Image (cartoon, rainbow, N blue to C red; front, side, top):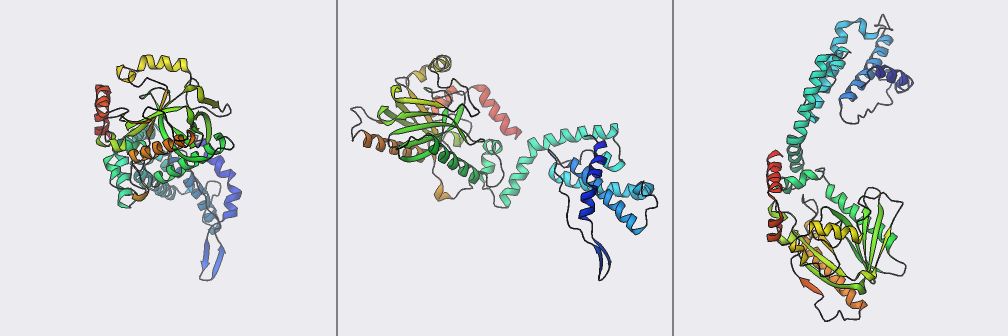
Length: 416
């Protein structure tokens, strides 16, 4: 922080200070002036600089008030001429910053030495360093529990916020986050539908589903929440940039090219009970003939994944290194894997609006099957179209979970 700029800031605000004025009551019915505004000071990362700036503004206004009363004998020096009074004034503002900072950050305010004395020294710098370390500890270890307890007592969250600590800390614990995400997902479906669905096609429904970045694989290195659209003629899988609200790229698969669907439990983690329950970890595989697919990339959008994610050569190289013998059982055709999004983790949504992952997948598979039957006039071939089989069973997930992952999760629970 460049403290010499504080005086420049106050000087630049002199006109605004004069316009806002202050309240001056001379008697029961005699008001000389009224305050018509106030300064709102925001800091990028903390309230420490805010307190310093507010203190400087208050000092400037106080000097003006003393001059109006005829108390200040040296206007150019202001309250610095009255050392005892200046010390008291500085301590009042420094204590104000410390009190507010302890409520928000768990430590006294940084740069308190400047507020108290008007200068920086080595002691103040060392004190700021120790306070910064203490803030990092409080923010990492203690702050989540304190905020979660306050939100729970106010009724913003349910008891699940304490049961699902790793998931709760990864997402914002701010009240209403799940309601906002529900609107964000609905908006993504609407935007994608308006962009990718061909003219003359009628949309049946749309969802957001988790899917490996690489096709033709069940357990990818990373998963992406994609927009899945079903029409009476095709399925559209869209990579959506949620921040920019843009479709990055999409794939169109004609319903006539879909050969079969495999649905079942889709367990990716064995860290806790809710990560292993089938009703909360369910998905499906969509097998199709590649001759009926088409890919479009929006070159004007910022990509949030590798440009070769739909490259056959890149996928084959990825599969050759990442897929074991268990993956080979599913490589009897080209497929895309989808896992239902588990939402309402913190229990904010009404119970009647919540469906578990298994219910979501059952509904999606049913609608795809009905659309395919309608397009193929009731005939889906001799083989069974919908197969019930685990995508990744609990036993397979346990075998694939390494010791380092298990130990890391245990340490995370202890740390949090």
